[in-house]
Length: 336
Image (cartoon, rainbow, N blue to C red; front, side, top):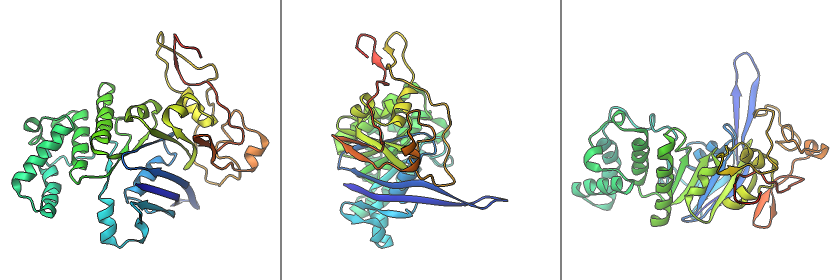
C-alpha cells in the first residue's frame, strides 16, 4: 500500500530580466493507493498531476509531506534502500516515441534489466529469454516479430505495449501511467486501457492513472477512485462513477461539460456550462478558493477564504457551495 500525506511541491523559477517566481505545483495532497487498487488523477494540463506521479516515482523531490510505501517513509531511508523500494514503482511515459532508445533493439532494452533480475534470482540466460517472451506475450505482442526490431519499426500502440512490458521486468507493485493513451490512435486506446485493467486483475498491480480524459478512467476496472486536481490541490474525490454521474465541485462539472457528445446516442446533461476564462498558474498566492476567478457560481466568501476538502458521504469536495449538477452525457433513452 502507498500512502501520500500532505505532499507539496514548490518550484522557484528565475526568469530572465525578471524576479524569481514561485509556483505551487502541488498543495497538501493526501491519497491512498491500496494493493491492487486504481486511482485516477484528472485535470487540465499544468494542474500538477504529473508532478505528483513523478514524486511518487522518485523523479522529483517533495518540498514537504511524505510518501509511505508498505509502511516505510522513503524520505527517511538510505539511498540504497530507497532505490530498491522505488524500483517497485514504475513509470509508463506519455510519449512512446521518445521513451525508447532508437539505437537499441527491443531485445537489448529488455535484456539489460532482465539480466540484473536474473542475477538476483540466480537464474541463467534461458530464463532471461523465457521471461522476455512471457512479458511480450502478456502485453499482446509476438516476441518473434518484435524482439529484434528497433523502435522506429513499430507502431505507436506497439511501442506503448513494449514500454509496459519493460516496466514489468522488475515485477513492480504499482504502475504510474502518465497520459499513456494521449499520443496513440483512438482505435488503439481501448486495448491499452484493457491491458492495464487485466494487469491489475491478474497480478494485483496497483495503478495510478494520470489523464485529462475523464472517460478513460472508467476502463480501469471496478472499485476505482477519481481525484480531481486543480492548481495542485485535490478539489474533489470519490468513486469514479459517482464523481462522473454526481459531481459536486464546479470545476469537476466544467471538465465533464467539456466532454463531447455522441449525437443520436447521447445527450448533454441539462446543467452543462462552459468556462469562458483560461487556466493559469498563479504567480501570487490567492487568499481564497483557487478556482474562484473562473467559477460561475462563486460568492464573495470564495475569494476571501480557501475551502478545505470536506467529506460528503463516500466522497469529498473543496467547495463552500457544493451542489450536484447534471452535466454528464446520458443515453437518449434515459432521463436527464
